[in-house]
Amino acid sequence: MQISPDLLFTIAGFPITNTVVTTLVTDVILITLVLIVGKSVALKPSKVQNIIEAVSDYFREITESIAGERASFIYPWVLSFFLFIVISNLAAQIPGFESIRFHTSSSGHHGVALFRAATSDLNLTLALAVTSVVATHCLSVKHTGIKSYVTRFITFKMFPIFLFVGILEFVNELAKFISFSFRLFGNIFAGEKVMATMYSLCPFGLPLPFIGLELMVALIQAIVFAMLTMAFMHIMTDKSH
Image (tube, rainbow, N blue to C red; front, side, top):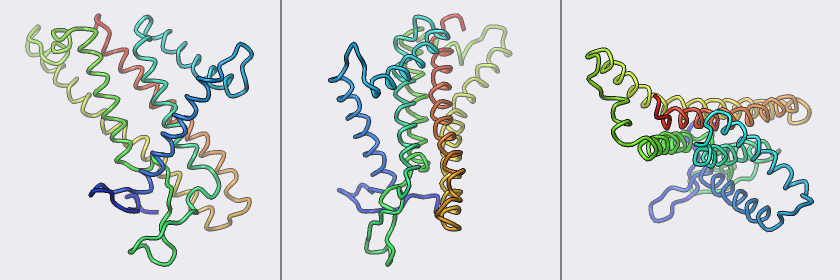
């Protein structure tokens, strides 16, 4: 398994890789889930509704306990990141997920995998990181004001100490792009490599404990990304900082 995803075909010059296909499938699952739950909400909830409500309430309660009234605009981002990442990660653990082959002019006799864990593509995890960081700064400007936002990074009070602290804050914000993207990508890609090795050694029995481990990693990484986003949004939208 190589680091870069496999190219399947292009549309108007835009490359469609197996991770792009998995991303689109994840989007379809999310949209379908929202439509189904939205139309079937009942006072006597079904099992699916119970699960969705439990997940939703869990993240709302945590966000409210930390961000207070600001949870109203932070919580949707937290839940959205979690659902997208966890569905993408869990889908990759379905047996035979990468066994469906797609043949291209340069793929050889065995073809290439039609599906691959979307978060094992650094392009996607970097896109998620950029979305999280940019959204955090936009919310900061909106809810604290441009003056308060700018003084987080540029201030001449107690010069030059606070100016140096502001520079460190700026560097820290840039580092989030790396930490967010590489943490998620590294864990999922490493897991994919391990699973590929286990299946190649013995496809029956041997991969089972590793599947359990990867399911745990898939869930934990989704929670970590969502919680870090929530924490950073809380900090950046707090006027007292």
